[in-house]
Amino acid sequence: MRYLLANEKLVVAGRVWKGFPLLLNTGGHPMEPAQSFLWDLIASNGRVSSPKSWEAYGWALYDFFAFVLANGLDWRQHDSPGMPSALEAYRDWSKGTVGLANTTINNRLRVIVRFYQWAVKKGLIDRPPFNLVSIQTSRQPGFLAHVDATSGKVESPSILLKQQVQSIKILTKEQVKVCYEALPNLTHRLMFSLMLRTGLRQIECRTWPENPAYVFDPSRRRDLRSNQKIRLSLDPRDMEIKNGKPRSIDMPYELMEELDTYSVRHRQMRERNHRNGGKFPILFLTEHGAPYTKGALIAIFAALSRRVGFHVTAHMLRHTYATFLLWSLRKSETFEGEPLLYVRDRMGHADVTTTAIYLHLINSLEGHLVLAHEDEIDQLFAGAGP
Image (cartoon, rainbow, N blue to C red; front, side):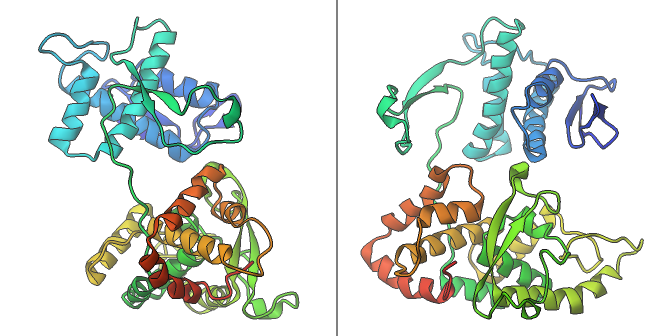
């Protein structure tokens, strides 16, 4: 069995399906019914729009069916006395043998659960190999809470593993300083600063465009002044943005100066190092003149973690930005507007309830921790108002 992502040659009804997951059997034919499920979910109904999500869905199904085939199991198999279902066997193997985290396993199981529910609707099986159980959620009340008769209860597949709610990890100002000083590579240091001070996702940072709309000398703009924030519109046609949704961010004036200096003095040297003379429309290039991959960025932060002695990831910079910014805006006497909505828009969250997790984090800090962090926040986001 093989798992591939389609290139630009996969065209259906005039649309290019680059990145569509392909599950192939040993004969090179589509692995059914998994492939039909993916097509129905992604292409026919358009319920999953992001190619990154396509890849995750495809990988979850590939991992499950590869396990089933390797162990001579039938995916339609239900549990019986002394014999678990194929789905239960896969879950237990993922946990006991592979040692995956419960969160990772559950993310994959949710995809497979949707496959089984689809198979029932298609008449391929009579019932799925799991039950639905009612659980109480800690979800915050929404706009229509007054007409919600569920009392916060939802139906959840019994196959899922129990998992603890993961606390948000952020960096203190001192940790930020230690990390920054421990990055000897100028490109890595600038990418670190860009994610920390604008809340960019790692993929957005890696694909940051090298064009005048995103990198310029702010001193040449008469409408800009030192120490202010520069509003930038992020366009998915220029860079990779989650779900392809445009949004705007506010960049510090001095950070834009650093990006411009880097573009003029350093990027061109890296670009010349590409062995095939390749040209890429992005700002940050490796020493070999190529774009950074996700794996490369993970490796950079893994090395940084070993160097500084504490765990740090690219996504922690985004959490740090949101938490410190929300706190500073809430205590600002000059900011006009709703801090939570402002941070939501800068982060690109589809729902304000996602942004509210940072509010809960702030409110959960004990008094002595609040006092310990207050000065750090002021210094880290000095003049952070929009």
